[in-house]
Length: 65
Image (cartoon, rainbow, N blue to C red; front, side, top):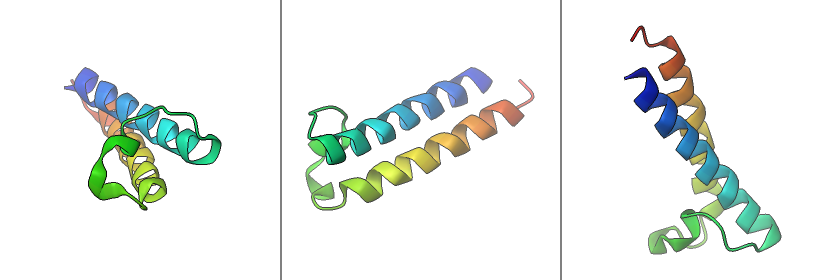
């Protein structure tokens, strides 16, 4: 379970960072830009992914197994 939470946290962190990079530099990376209903809210979704990633990594490091 610890590895799964760590992996999911890492993926969420990467997607959050890539979403922010896309918004501020116009590089076409990340999955946030491809989700249609998030049009106009990409920065908020990327920040939410960053927060989720940190939370998942913290939960994974606290996990006993």
